[in-house]
Length: 210
Image (cartoon, rainbow, N blue to C red; front, side):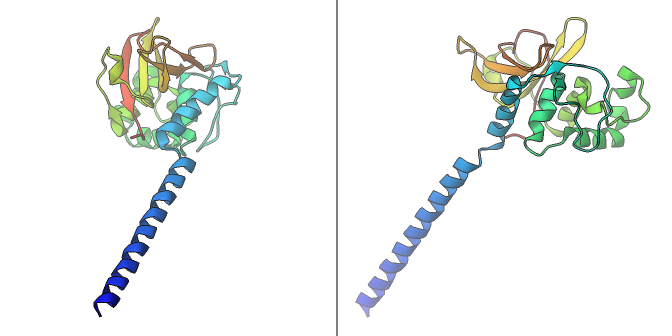
């Protein structure tokens, strides 16, 4: 009886060990096939620097939801919008739903004289994105130390002439290894540049990423 019990116990232990190893290998394989959201988001932003995109801040009538302006055009906000689309996140729809329900909380009337939401342009305006990320993401402290910014973060600046700007923090380092590089479109199409502290920072956000 004792030998039978010991044999049964050993078989159960062996089967449990095999099950554990199978689960471990499956998890590792899944991790290799499905990179996390942060990696997908950063890769989507970086991919845009290879595209031939002309800066064009004109007003476009676009479809809704998941609408986009012509692929060969874009501004700074389009870098962010298109990167999030790779995660299945449609800022056009999300911003519209929030501004429709909370119009007075957005600067649409104060800044542009709007009396109602506009699905063609609202999500493509930096101040609206700042409001949305503050309400639905994490608004982080604005600091002048590079270590406080992580890959996948969003940073907004105020350019000369009171022009708001936004970019994506990547996992690529500056040549001196001190700062993470930014994907942004300031007029020459999406670029990867060392501009984290090049302009006055007005906002630091984290949205839909760990």
